[in-house]
Amino acid sequence: MENIMFAKAFTIAIGSIVPAISIGMIGSNAMKSIGRNPESAGKILVPMLLSCALAEAIAIYALVIAFSIK
Image 1 (cartoon, rainbow, N blue to C red):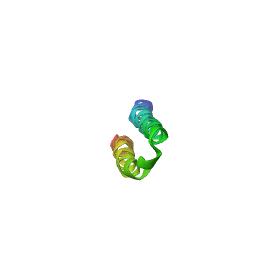
Image 2 (image 1 turned 180 degrees about the vertical axis):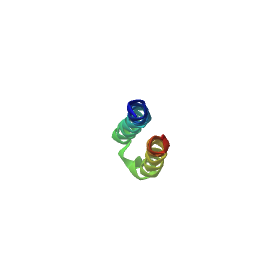
Image 3 (image 1 turned 90 degrees about the horizontal axis):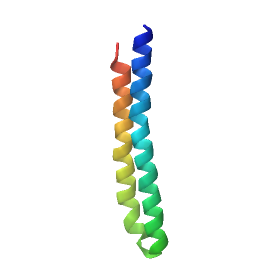
């Protein structure tokens, strides 16, 4: 029982660190490019949101895997 709980916690921890870092990098780079060229904010917003959604999907997959560990 103890090993199962550790495996679930480890899966969630590892599966959420990488998406958190990537979402931070996506947001940071988007803000930098908007800061350099404010007129491009509309063109940057949609790809930024799609990239964040794809990165967040990795965390959701890790959560599903953690729930499926028995």
